[in-house]
Length: 343
Image 1: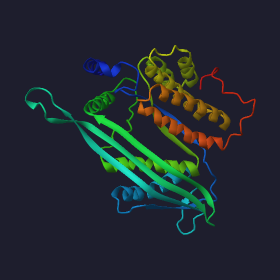
Image 2: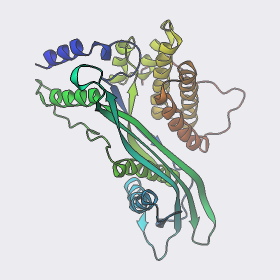
Image 3: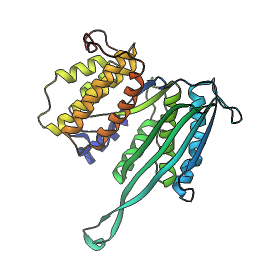
């Protein structure tokens, strides 16, 4: 039954399965993203204060209200030795929401045939948002521990075809397979309202704050490019990241530059994965530097692909953390080997 459904989908929507890109039938892998704290806290007791630049603005007020509890929860989730102590905090964390935009806008198609010609029909939803905050961490005596401006963005488009495919995947996921364990899919509920988008922005901001102050370890879902790259993606499924990168680097570049951008992007994913598995901060830093180069090359080769921007931001944050732990590279510094036992 599973094969019949997939075959039917490929007949109805063959364009979804062709060409280079991420496609409608997306391929994702999960990486365990480990980041060392950027600073050392002066003690275990902390307090969080969040305000809005314009409390009368509904978006800023809701973001500030949610951010308070999310930062507290994120810190304790990653470091159980921390405790919330508003009366005598060793560290006071202060955030101010400067800007909050969140919207879910319906999109329409104009019908061109028969009696409905000229009428508007819902075709999907465009969801986007932006949250900008200032963040400071101070010791009890008022000395600065850390400070950083934080900007997070969310931008996504949903359409009827995406919804149909999502529902098909849900049906396929419920079909029992011999020897397979049932696994609930995460992220089934896509954001559809302003509050949903604010929740995503706040969650990402809280994780950024937590990553500054404590060691974090989170699971990150990352898309893999498909098309001619599908065969090699099996190495990613098996966790064979060295082989994954080697095969992509040695295969001939794809004929069109905007298509080959996805090969470069996948190399960046492989280098990023190897960085998270590296056995030393210096080695991790070098892998992340290589990943940034590949992601940027992909963006230059295909500027129309918006998803190439997000990985660069993610890796630059990781690089900032590991630079604090790894010694300055000397003249004899070498890039990590690409051969040997698979990681």
